[in-house]
Amino acid sequence: MRSGRIQSSASCSASSSSTFPHPPCLSSASRHCKFPRLLSPRALSLSQRVSRNCLVPETTQFSFSKQSSTNKKRLFPVNVGALVTSNTEAISTGPLVAEEKIGVLLLNLGGPETLDDVQPFLFNLFADPDIIRLPRLFRFLQKPLAQFISVLRAPKSKEGYASIGGGSPLRRITDDQAEELRKSLWAKDVPAKVYVGMRYWHPFTEEAIEQIKRDGITKLVVLPLYPQFSISTSGSSLRLLESIFRDDEYLVNMQHTVIPSWYQREGYIKSMANLIEKELQKFDRPEKVVIFFSAHGVPLAYVEEAGDPYKAEMEECVDLIIEELEKRKITNAYTLAYQSRVGPVEWLKPYTDDTIVDLGRKGVKGLLAVPISFVSEHIETLEEIDVEYKELALESGIQNWGRVPALGCEPMFISDLADAVIESLPYVGAMAVSNLEARQSLVPLGSVEELLATYDSQRRELPAPVTVWEWGWTKSAETWNGRAAMLAVLVLLLLEVTTGEGFLHQWGILPLFH
Image (cartoon, rainbow, N blue to C red):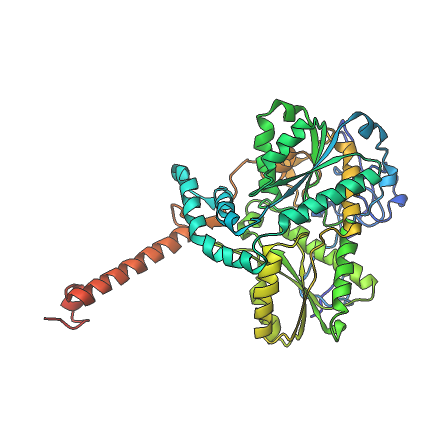
């Protein structure tokens, strides 16, 4: 259960031809660098990772070396990146907030608040063409099909929501986070308004945008409440925003920027480490407990075909948390797996359920689950992890089970989100992402259009996690052809048995009935 540590190093040199300053990646020892201390919560591409002692504009290119050591108990290899620390006192926000109306738009998935909301929520989910992909010729069936699937799946989904209190707490928690973020921003002399926009349930993103327009917001920071960027979560919301912005003159003129991911920020990392350390102390033998990071899964095609940075960001996020724990003399073994897969396509591996069974077979007796991609409690933490995976762990021989709560409104976490917003303000309306053709593996700070161009430069449709059918020699076609063939065989066999006539009787395989 040991593997080497991977480290990166680089020299500090840069030049930029852009009209606007590019937001640098903030390292934990920026005082050693000669670049201006304009801060940003952005994530650089893996080829641009730098050591922890300089600030580097995004146009700089680096080479890095990897070293290994054996002082960590790892269950998987990861890449190491720079921890982004907060230093908002270096930013002068006075002119920005004095003359402009600042808004922050928090993006999240949304969830049904009552059992009656479950079926319409599922309809909105499956009506999204990024969730269910239909051939272009049959796009007119998108909503009827979504209606059919949502009605079919609603009873089972209602059971899950009933088990956690009759609905998802996601909206209530997100509203609380928005209010605490607003308070934190005002305490830091940034009188911003904070809005919540959900992708598939109230308050919808469209509703939040209408309120932003009514309030006369002139500078907007878009902040998805997903620590790691994925085209299936943040990307889906950005696609929606792009379509809204494109057709509205007010929004076209409103300056904005997006913080696509913030998993590398010091406040987030330390808050996660605090929760893990606290939960470990509840075990009889904390040092023997395996820390089990469970992340929401995405289809493998998103990563391999569409350039989704989610897997790379997730692995680096886990590594940063482990490094923080090791500073506290916590050296537990750990692993990362992916949960919540649906449909016939292949998803990121290893799968959470398979990994739990495997750990049980290996004799692991204590397991601490960490919902690494969620900052709010909802169905996937309260039911999937707390009920389903706990039962599976106990059945697999794991005797002691624990779970780290989602961050919610942890003060350090909220304060650091406020710092991230403040640090991005100098780049609202003044950001130009360079070298889009390079398709950076990790997505930098930028506008909605620039970020979409970064991961989807050819503007192609994304592969869907649930493909109803496809034409051609594909896995989906083989699956459906196989099911159709099996159904036909069963029907013919039933006819043969009930009527006594058919090929099998003529060939003497089945006895003749008279």
